[in-house]
Image (cartoon, rainbow, N blue to C red; front, side, top):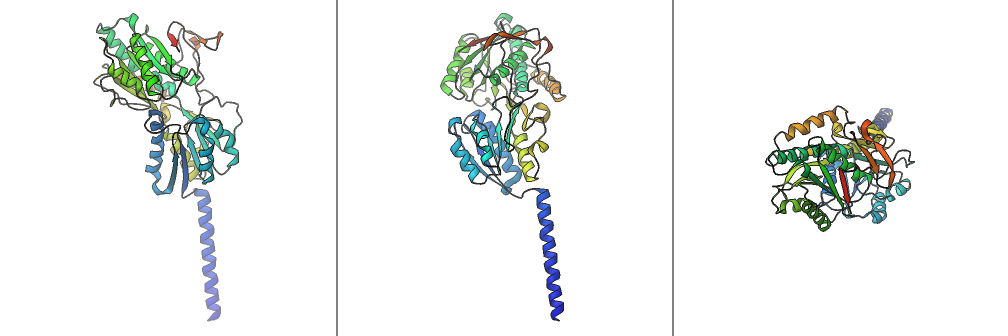
Length: 397
């Protein structure tokens, strides 16, 4: 009887050991059951840029529920990044996402090899040596900017056809934060989209020299309106330009193309459409990768440059939404969709292309002929087009 008991116990132990071994093997091949995820925002969700980025956090919570624990830090300036970064990494976050432009993230990543650091790209990463646990990503915003320009151009054409403005007065305005290539690429794609509909259209740009200031942005927008701009867009982070358009009291109406967040609630009479970078595909893909114990770049689809990834409409990284049918010109949706279909097919070389010789504002002797086109985001997710089109774009500081 004792032998039978011992044999039974040993058999049970062997079975249990085999089950534990199999479970561990399955866990290694199948990834993790639970992740701790950090999000660090440069602002809070009251601003369009951060609100838009926070939608990715919401998507993770919706998909994974109690399989993830999320820790968030808001209103973290770039020069204040180190403390919250170390705090989250020291709390054993498996992955941390950042929408700020601080160099600190890349510098500190090697100190926390157990954490993956994913940052919205802020510089040309081509040829850069980066830690193995550091990743950068950004949607190819110029695509959305160009399609936004088409919507603006359609409205301008309607205003011209109705005699509200003339072709010579087809002037758009742009409230811009800083003269970086990211901003310049965006507003250039915007005006080229406008000119695909109204070839005489021109663009006036005012820099606020801040990413987020309601007062500065609204003041800049008012100046543009006073200068005769009939359609505005922005690369800044508040609703200031939208309010300025809605409050415009002149004889000629002023319209707005939004960025990152719908402006229809605050500017229902002037909002045309909004473009946004969709952060959800990358963030969800990166979390999926860690859950399945795979490299992020093996899971996330897009244009991969080492540990840097970009994508556009074809992967859902750029989106047009909230087309205001009550304000937009007839046929705007069809015109936008026609361009989007080209982007979806991988045809992108028509944006930065035309009979233009453009100038580098930092070196006026450096020019570029756009007759053969310019391929944005060819080697990096960060936009690099930084040229000004003479007689089409006017800059005001």
